[in-house]
Length: 112
Length: 134
Image (tube, one colour):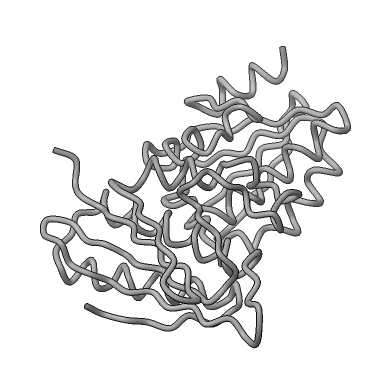
């Protein structure tokens, strides 16, 4: 699991995940998400290159989202593949974090 | 029927999920069903490892793979205190967990075709059935 972080000109932090966000993948990026939750004011987690997401990956994203929300910061998820989007929506993650079809749409939503 | 013991540690769950997926692949089960099996198996095993409590001694966790063409069933059993995930309970030990609030159960219902829980002696036995969409 790779996590590629990029600061965009509009103040958005893009965190692009690549690989399987399974129990091992989540463990590999969990600490970095804790850091992002504390350092980013507007975070878009891009899942375009994530082929799998399950329990512990959801937990990593949920903890980050709740931490940011508690500080008045914003987080969104973009570009999930269909099966990954089904995991996000059926678990209720979309009740906590908005999910957008592309990074650009998510970025615009957080900038507005 | 294939059987695989699972260590009481998060680090062993990936191996167990890969074991089940390998059997599913050998049984020519489709990608969508295999994805669903992996999601549900990781959810259930993580719950047992993180929140299950064995009343005496170490936890004993076992998964079984049963081919049911055109799909399969996964059976997870453990010697922890009774806990029926299909009853919509939130594990008391998981109240503060980020995945609490029934999110795990919602995942299991969304990705499995059927869930059956029974108590067998001192063991929880959860059978998850997976079939391809009609």
